[in-house]
Image 1 (cartoon, rainbow, N blue to C red):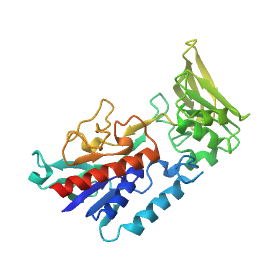
Image 2: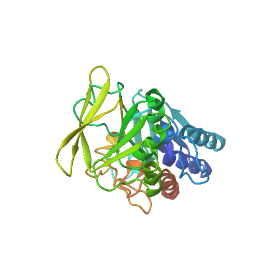
Image 3: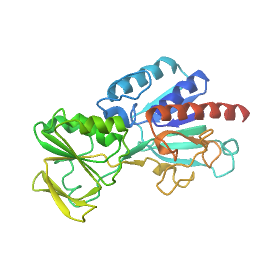
Image 4: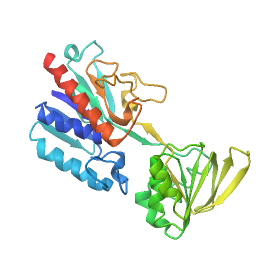
Length: 314
């Protein structure tokens, strides 16, 4: 049995893995890949210590750091997706013999304690035509697909940092970029918003909501509702890049730990403990107020420090 199973390989999971190695806790880190959501980012400008770093480079740095310290203490179970997390049903892991994480491939990992750091997945656009034209003009990855839309008019759905960063990235390829956001105010950092506004090929439509994706074989445009006038308007574009938020990747833990109404794991922000003794959570999978790479890493470290003390008391 392991001391700890860490589920997830983003900033929270990797930070916890590094600290687990330092604390000499027998650990297995189970993840589909190292890096988290930011692995597809063209340029991360707020990771402490790096003025700007590509998501893939950050993932390589995570892997290198973890590889340098893990020794024979931390085991990596890569390309594995956890589908269930169970306990024996008693009050403490010590009474039950721990928790078992089972992956899609059928592997099982049992440990005294669990840290859930699975982050969140991209929220799909839920309007007529969005599913039909996915990968035919509707896309969820600017880094992957942006160059395919060189010289074309495109739209970005979403007014957070991810939406504006996607727009800035696309301006390097596209003829024009129109960002549509359902609220009047933006969630993105003001400096990012102003950088986008300053570009001559950028257009921003606030307080509007997409209602339909148009096309034949491929996307030819979209319709959106102007929430001020109530009018339905049409925008001619060849691509629609969706950055409409995320959905916590917590389905496997449902029924074990307490979740909030949008399926984020409820935690005590002092130590990242969940409603179940022996289970912690960190990063974007939690109900923490703010979600950033740096915050996730800190939460992972905080959880590990508490896990270490808890295990030593068992």
